Image: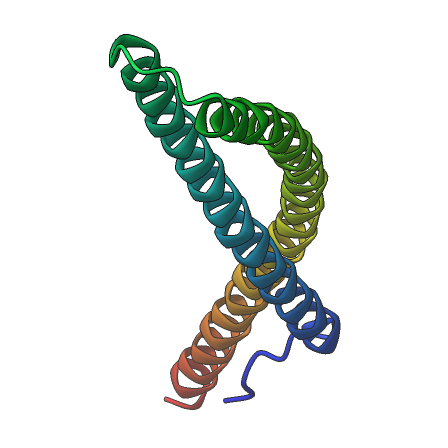
Length: 147
């Protein structure tokens, strides 16, 4: 029996490899996004602690202008850092969205070829069974005609 061979197997293999590569790239972007969001949470936590320290200084009764100025300046810096980090996260999300679309397109290409392979394989075996049945009929007819 001749075995089924998909003519576009090389193309299918290349597309599967491309899909895996794009999925790995997307995983790296997701990892970077998670790190960036964690960094934002750390900045927000630092801002919260700084605000608490500033409130404590105001409520302590003693006004230490140098410390108050230092905490206020640090708070301003943190506010800027938060805006920058949010911008970075938004950009990374946009990149992730594009990469997800690329993965989706690569997946569609792979699935299309897999369906074509499946269809051709079914046709191959259908034809094989037809030929086998024809051969059996021929053998049966030959035996019947001889006897």
